[in-house]
Image (tube, rainbow, N blue to C red; front, side):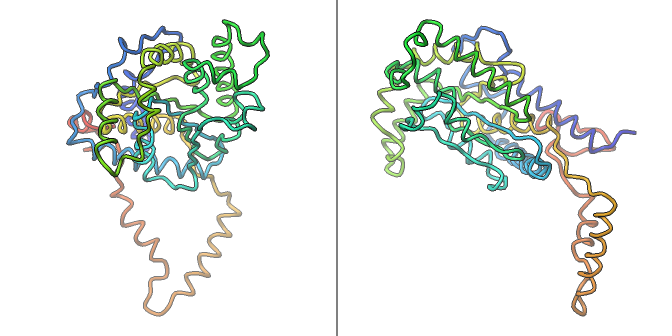
Length: 346
């Protein structure tokens, strides 16, 4: 009989893969963003179930992030792309709410500095990559170099490229270079997870108005945000071409419906959880010599227990709670998943 813990992990992975499949951009496919992906899609999930689903996802991420850090072999790079008001900050805040902040680093990329412009366009992103055992989040990412820079060619002039490099093949070459860079990272133990938060033009308008109408949100709005809306069609074209050219087997894109913030957060947690389950990080094994040394230290600490105190209260409580551990994939009865649970969560 297979280990039930392994069976549970397999069932989680299967459910998550099925849940996120409609979001995945198949490699080598030609994407028309507006036609292929609905920003209001919610996969039949109801908002009343959102908090429970996200809570399970956050707990699962916290568990696997601890394993990732303990193993210290693989790093994870999460790239978030979206237009203004797409929900990047909220996604980071809610999805990563349960993880150890020491193992997660967020990099925000603004207008390049003079030093950054003095290097190749990928240099500043390479400087902010996570270490092994860490999750790094790019709030906007190296894809700005084929999005904003493409929609606004004046930014390209600031990069001081040699004249021959500014021809019509520039964008095809950048797609190739980015794909090669991500493949290099993947082959060296760094998984690249790419989420595009897909917001409708109407929902962006509503969110901008809220930022204007609610005094506590005024600081989040700038006239530059509104001006970018005039480039909406250009951005949609740039997004479609980016997704078509850079969704690869080693680093596929996931287009997350972003009109409903609660559903976007569930989807983002699901994609990241599926990646971590696939990595399957393990706590390091302790050899016999080290285990013997641990037991010696354990006995010394037990001997220091005050009169009337348990020699090892943690050992007693851990045994009591071991059988009551809950997993994100729901309850099991007689080793089989309840059919209602299967419909609701992995």
